[in-house]
Each structure stands twice: as C-alpha cells, then as structure tokens.
Length: 183
Image 1 (cartoon, one colour):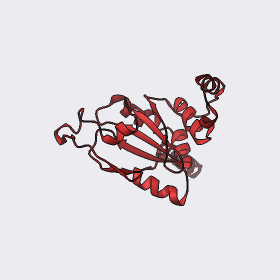
Image 2 (tube, rainbow, N blue to C red):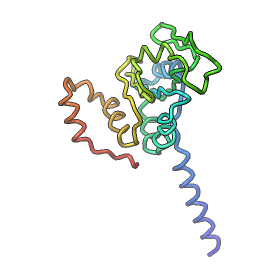
Image 3 (cartoon, rainbow, N blue to C red):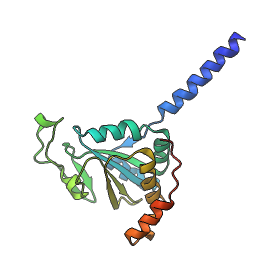
Image 4 (cartoon, helix red, strand yellow):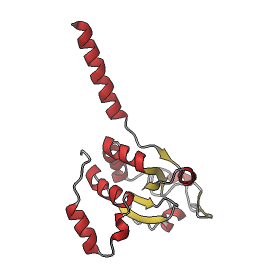
C-alpha cells in the first residue's frame, strides 16, 4: 500500500514538473534565419527592454504558459531582442547597431536600437512576426495574456492575415475567434 502511495506521489510530481518546465526555446535572429533554411517556420520575436515592467509580466505570465510555449515551439522560431541593447544584428544583408548605447544605462532607458526602429517598434513590449523566408509581417504592441496572444499566433501561423484587406475583416476574425489556451 505504501509503495502505491509513493509511486502515485512520484507520478503526480513528475507530471506537475513537466507542466511547469514547458518553456519557449529562444534563439537569436541569426540562428532563426539559419534554421529557416533547413526547416521553414515563421519567426516570433519578443522585442523588450530591461526596464520595461509589462515586458517582465509577459515573460512571467504569458511566455511561461504551457499552451503558449508549446504552440510557439511547434510553429515558430522564437527570438528575444533587447530594443535598447548593444547587439549587432544582420538582417537582409543590412547591419543594425545601437551607436548611442550607453553601458552605464544598461538597466534603465537607453537609446533605441536601429533594428527596433526598422521594425517600427514604438512601444514595449512588442511582438514582431516574420514569414518563413524571414520577411517582416507585422508588429503587435502591448502586454498580452495567453489567450490574447493566441489570437495573433494563430492568425499569422495560418496565414489568415493575408486574406484580410480591411479592419472589418479583422474585427470579424476577432469576434469569431475561440481561444483554447488556458489562462
């Protein structure tokens, strides 16, 4: 009897650990673009800053969600990009830098990276979507809960955005969307 209880507890612990351990597999943009050559997938980029509170909430509440992590890992290459960082980024044979980066302000407001300007990022956090060839699709700004992000993850993954030519069509999609991710 005791053996069954112990085995039961181990099984429950293992299952709960697996559920908690679901994480998004983050790579650099260069790695994602290279991976696309072998296995085409869209790219999902989290554009954040070190000082941004909603960015930290997105990391904690949305990106740690098992449904979000599983969907992103299956359908996208996930990239984290510090919009005020000092990394050099090569995209479409163009090099982007942050020439006004101040290392003393690494955890405070700093200058915007050239790549974040190129992506039309105007607020943090912003999630940027790219197609299977690394082409820019769209930025989506603001903190999103798992089911709110699900709408966009599925919209771009399925290419339904290509069928939409008006705000009314997006509104129709939005109204008819039935989320399945757990909050």
